Amino acid sequence: MSGERRFQWNVALILFGVLFLGVSDTQLVAPLLPLIASDLGITPGHAGIIVTTYSLAAAAFALFVGPVSDRVGRKKVLVSGLAVFSLASFFTYHVSTFGALVILRALTGLAAGTLSTSALSFAGDYYPYEERGRAMGILSMGYFVAFVAGVPAGALAASRLGWHWVFACLSAGAGAMFAIAVIQLPSRPISAPSEWRPAGLLDHFRKPDRFAGMIAALLTSGGIVGFLTYTGAWLKTTYDIGVDRIGLLFMVSGAAAIAASPVSGWLSDHAGKRNVIVWSNIVLALLFVIVARTESGVWLVMGIATLSIAASARQAPLHALTTEIVVPEIRGEYIALRNAFSQLGIAAIAAVAAPAFDRRGFSAVAAIAAFATLLIPICCIWLKEPDRA
Image (spheres, rainbow, N blue to C red):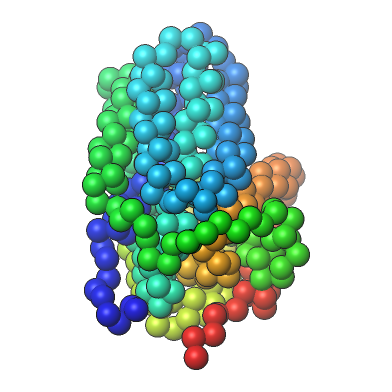
């Protein structure tokens, strides 16, 4: 089928926009916390409750909405998530008490979990496996564009107009994406399920390839987030690099990741998803250790940029491969479970990295991230390319 039609850019770009919104909303809270705390008369630590409730709501609801999308269709669930996201962000713009903010952020988390699960599942249904790496490369750009453009723009707007306006902009963006998705997304993607075949969550743990996909997602998210969490503190304490220069460094590395994402997706369609996953993770593990031992200067900038490229290169092929190891009838359910494992990996590795950084420094954090990353190629023993003969 892939030879009978041209690559559908419009669908990939719409799903990219959906992921961009969800990731921007997640990442924007960190720079806004001091402003929120000051405005509502609470401590930043207390304000951090909204991050916890948001993440728990997103992870928990994704497990519910994934199977629902298998039954009623991806588009219906996706546009519903956009509608809830827009409304919750609109009411957040008007919020005046911390209790109301916690409730609204939990509601936004529900919607965000819906968007991520539905967008990836929709792409898995719509794009043939032979071109799915390319599609997932475009979608994965949403993670990095949010980091490079969305978060700095939101932080700047908050400093000038107040933190409420950030959520007004998110509401407007989600409303626009809702209209575009309703009009432009096909009602029934290619290879959409014709009937619902329920599979209990425990069934996925009994299949070696599915379990390997979940562990790979856990290690992928946990390793990179654990490393990046302490990168800023390392640069500040070791080299006395200011926050503004750290921010610029992250923007440069993020731009490199944006460029690498669609290229790696295209490459995985031609060289094999599994091959790109294996080699990008091996390179990334080495770069974790090398960067942690690099002196400040141009080599450090190049090292972090190269590290970002390697981290970005694994996303698209991993998404493409793990959406293919299950049939469309249970794809949403499996992607939801896999996403929950990603969140679990972030929490677990961050918890291990925290005392390691305090006791042994950033090199210990890099070693933990490298070890987790080197386990991903081992998962590929069970993550095999489908037989297209």
